[in-house]
Picture 1: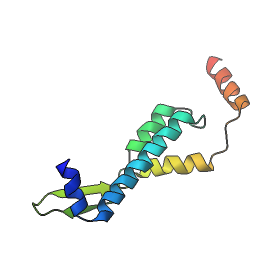
Picture 2: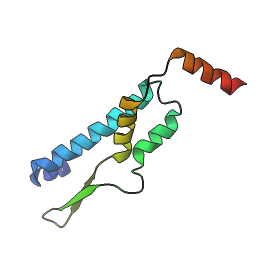
Picture 3: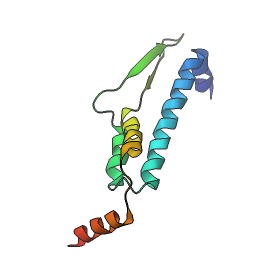
Length: 103
């Protein structure tokens, strides 16, 4: 708990950015679980953890020489973008997909 208090002493922007990144990641995971658009859910879930080999982040040095690093979840942002831009999956598409798997 003292670590959380210490983070907020670095500036309110740090705590807001960390919370925003967490909310983005949780939102993308919930979209993957609930939406029929994502067919291979485990791969999409893995994508939320991967940042395409790089990430945008910033570091802050605290008084005791500790470094705090907060990154932008690029994989999670891509999942949210894909969900918003993808066409909705109709029940007929799901049925066709299931019939191709069994054939």
